[in-house]
Length: 241
Image 1 (cartoon, helix red, strand yellow):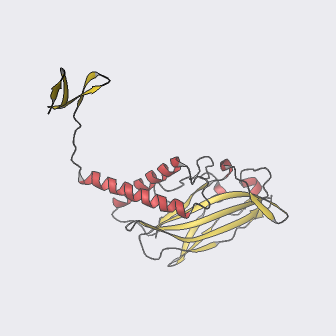
Image 2: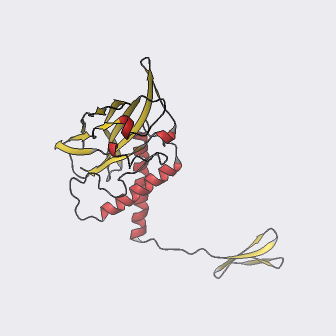
Image 3: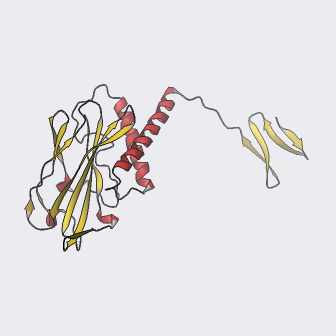
């Protein structure tokens, strides 16, 4: 209810609120109240789920993530996971093997200063060899010809971390990790096939994060080049178990 005070009105009157600001009479509309629908409640729950999963995922890959303290990357990851969760809920049936075709997660970059999505030599292929096992391989390549040139570096390491996510329980778990090392030379290198544990039960979201790191090795000691612009890191593979 509005009250008069020295010829000025304060409080609520109808659809308006009267108040004083710096000695002047001011008026604004009452805030509108909206009834939350089932869809809006669900949307809020999904966003919360995406935020929790994204935080756990970033924690598991922080050792290879050059953008671990970048808030913009955090927001983008939460948004991508939120869109994927909403997309998945609308699917009547999802094929068991959807390697690298999951929307919103494919080619996600944790370092937008070094996009690795167009680096063809980092395109992984994968196959389930038996329940609970996955084989991951990279194409053969010449490191100096394929990888972006980095002065002083003489070694490249591809670091992989496979994370499994239970979307119903909002739980994440590391399923495996590997490091593939190659000299930074002109020769063609056949990279080893990596075998990791994967989820045997159906329905888990599996995300393989890859980082490319450059090293300078001298006298058996190795130092990583830490310029963030030189350190690609992204989702190399995303599939449902």
